[in-house]
Length: 252
Image 1 (cartoon, rainbow, N blue to C red):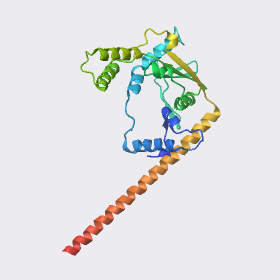
Image 2 (tube, rainbow, N blue to C red; image 1 turned 120 degrees about the vertical axis):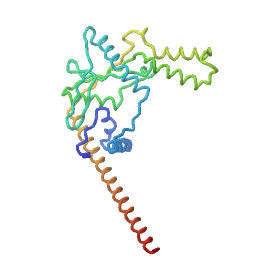
Image 3 (tube, rainbow, N blue to C red; image 1 turned 180 degrees about the horizontal axis):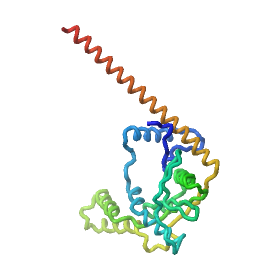
Image 4 (cartoon, rainbow, N blue to C red; image 1 turned 90 degrees about the vertical axis):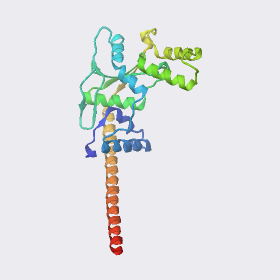
């Protein structure tokens, strides 16, 4: 695999860009995981309840966008994926030269305490570069949690609380409180979303290109180190086989 041509996905940018402009230990750890996944055809990332809700409620997020900022209009999910040789990605919505990325909060607590993160920022800058615009918006919304995820949470609650039965009054009360945190139908629309605007500058593009160049070089170094290790192992095994043959010949 030619890592000098490796194209990074939008959500990966924040994991390879640092404030210092150098690859940090955290950046290198991520790149090692990425390298392992690339050469083995696997991924370390596993699904989580947060990720699953985000995927399941993607259309609900777009509907909320339609019912608030673009009331009376019908925005649809963008299906186009772009690649410029440096980065690749598929934004959620593009409207009025503004790129939208829609995130769904897990519950009311994660929503109220949310902030524009480093990774979200660079993900949006990646989309802007790909779509050749300079304005993007993170639309962070509060939608009901799907029933199958709530049932799973109730099951975890039951086993964690060592309740005698699922008819236990305390357990039922805790389940009611759990569902209250995840149902937002009664909330007014203005309480169900947050917006962060992000811009793209020429300097941002340079930052991305420099970071990717360093990341690619590091991936190439990992590839060379692995090749050297494998070559050493092959030669070592050949040496052991040679020793065994000599020992066998002496015993005849």
